Image (tube, rainbow, N blue to C red; front, side, top):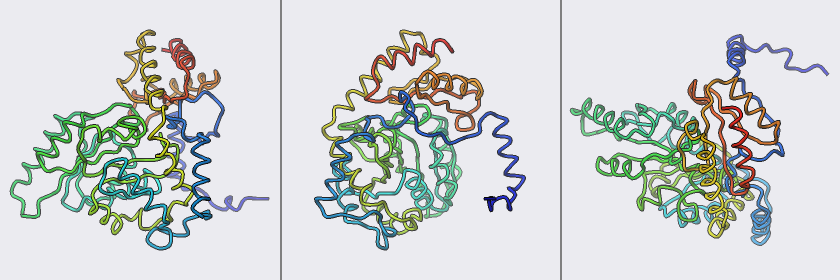
Length: 390
């Protein structure tokens, strides 16, 4: 049967952009899941395949007489299921936060926060390597936004001072300043000096926002994240459930007033159907498991072993310094790094190439994601194979 879409011709501008991406060997394509040795997923603790969590989530729904497949509407209409309150209270207790507001994804949470909280006349300073979802939210904001050099607090201080000097004669409606970073950066796996950032914000009355997507479940007591290790609170934390928690969704942690504001003004929260009860039950059980799991310790053992292996094999200079589950080997050039990743996959290892423009040109890389379930033999094999390429 002839497709109806043959009647439509894609605009030349769009086709040209696709052609350019293909010429740069950077055209993205969807791959099916594979059975290769996993060095690519964000499932750091193996929770996404955890039978106990799956069965406990199902039994929790049965025990509480919850037999619903969908949320039926946005949370402000018919979708604010009783489980939302249960899980948000659980998040507050676990993360020592005054309030928590669940969103459908980390992307939604970042879009919802940055498009609504900073106001016209306010100023946002964000790390130059910040996640794309935060950049997109900032673009939707009416605030001014400036990037600072990656993890460079001196550059951030200089830019803050410059902006303050420009506006020394402002009226009483002084601009609020928001500082934005990640506790573990998704493409480099490194971490800023959160203690100094928190001090800077406290002294100057700036508002610190930290995306903890790749820290929750990996760092802190029972995987509570890196901010809690500093024994203080940021203005807002974004946590996600689709990585170490092996579930889906995200939450913004902060004050009761911030939560009330987001419920009233965050469009990605207001105008989307809520998560189904099963998704919330999975988050609930994943957190219950997080309190008692030994997988976090196993993950850190694997991180330590991976780092010792890159030392032994004299590969350290090729890697970005990281103590997280994300370890990146710089291999410049889309074509080169894609070819090496393909060779890995042919050898049975799921190692992904990260291409420009996702990362800067000449900073293309192999991204090794480590897991509690990777064996030491797998780690040794994957790094020994790397020595044949670099």
